[in-house]
Structure formats: C-alpha cells, structure tokens
Length: 123
Image 1 (tube, rainbow, N blue to C red):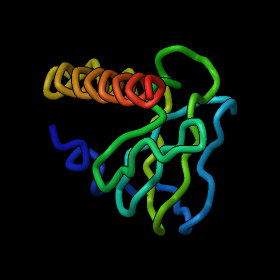
Image 2 (image 1 turned 180 degrees about the vertical axis):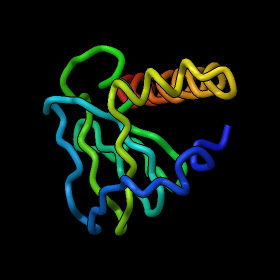
Image 3 (image 1 turned 30 degrees about the horizontal axis):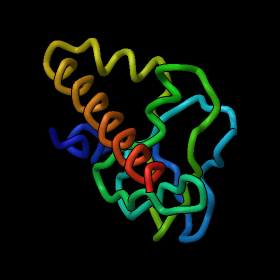
Image 4 (image 1 turned 45 degrees about the horizontal axis):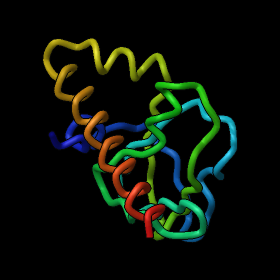
C-alpha cells in the first residue's frame, strides 16, 4: 500500500526543519504522522533504528495503546508531516475502499519495528 497516495494532497501538514525533534520517548502521544516530504530518524536507546521517507508513517502505537512514546523522532531533513489523530485514524481503518489495507499496513509496520528492536536488544 502506498500511504502517501492518501495524503499527498493534504493541506493540514506540519513543517519541521532538519534537526528538530518531533517528539521524545516518554512524551504524551495523541497522534501518528505520515511523511508528506523529507526524512525522519527513529531513535531508540540512542541508536537510529531506521530512517523514514516520504509515504512512511510513525507514531502509530500512540493511536492503539494510549501509552507514552517509545522512541524519539528527529527530522533528518526539512520535512512536512501530516498528523493523524484517533478520530481520523478510526475513519481511515473503517473505510471499505482502503480500510483493511490501511489497518494491515499499520500492523505490518509495527511488527517490523518490534523485530528490529528485538534484534538490536539481542546484540
């Protein structure tokens, strides 16, 4: 699924400059983000877990478990991020045209990130 197709025309984005912190591990989480343009580093235990690019999502666990952020995110380049709050997330996963694809896409991303963290932790 190409997430960016759903959000490329979105006018409700937030701009971050390279080096700006988007959120810190432990902070209150109320939304996830879709990267409309630019790159974002996901940092876990002082290691870059991955660098995300246009079309990728992050912060998705915030909409599922209401727990504090588990990682820190920093804009690697200037970027535009589309925020997705709980109401919008629920709407996206309930739409028959793309809902199940979107929900499965989010679950796959979460599973991949958990595997990466487990791999890093086992070293």
